[in-house]
Image (cartoon, rainbow, N blue to C red; front, side, top):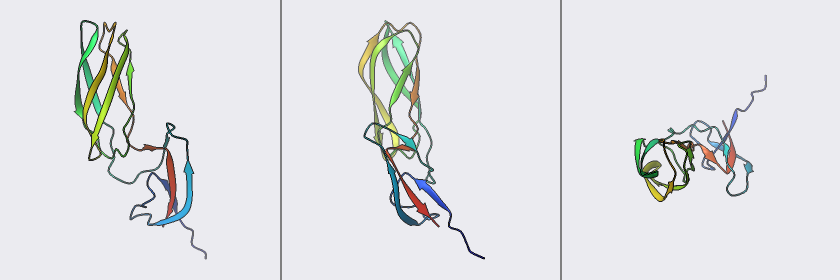
Length: 130
């Protein structure tokens, strides 16, 4: 009876101990594009909220710093009635450490929702087997 290999696409070329053999196969996307690979490491998404004053975002507070970020996530500002706000996430040791306000925007009359990209997105996946 032949045994079959079990393989997973992972976000790192350094394969996880559960799938230690890199097959040499990979999928790459152009810069700025992301895909989700199976990830066996400790990863969790971060969460943050913002406050507004005089129609502008005046503060960002991290509720959960998440874990496993290898690249800087994108932050989408949803709702609130305003526009033009630009937020820059700062990642330290795989966790969201801070969110800098590069542009506070205008016209916010309700607190917008901050949607932070999950940490297990990458622009390449590598096939690892056991």
